[in-house]
Length: 163
Image (cartoon, rainbow, N blue to C red; front, side, top):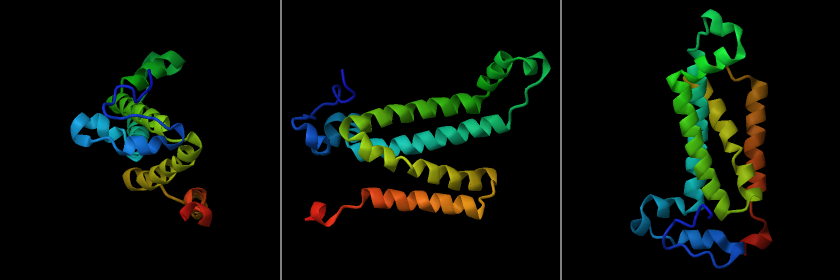
C-alpha cells in the first residue's frame, strides 16, 4: 500500500506526470490528506519539520548534563539523552517530517526532490545563528551561498522546457 493509497480523489494514471494527479486533489474533500497530496506542500512541511526536529534535538543536547554512573557507560548516556523532553519532541517532529518526505517522494522524482532538500542546510545554518548564537564564518556563509546557487541551477528550466 503506497503513501497515496489512502488519499481520496487522487488518481495516478500517468506515472510520468504524477504531480498533475496530485494537483487536482480537492482540499475540501479530504482535508489534510488532500493538502498533502500536493507534492510541494508535503516537501515544504517535510523541510520545516526536519529542520525544527534537528533544532529541538540540539536544544535538548545543549541542556544535557550527564552525571553519576550513567556518564561512564554508553547506554547510560543514551538513556539520559533520550530522557530530555526536547530530544524526544525533536525526534517526533523529525519523524513526522520523514512521513511528509515519503509522501512528496511518492509524487515526484527523487532526483528532483533530493537536491531541493538542500534548503534544509540553509535553514539550519540561519536558525542556529539566530536561536543558538552560533557564529557563521565567511567560509561557511560562502558554502551556504554555493548550495543556494546549486539549487537554482539544478531547478532552472532550460529554454526547451519552458516553451
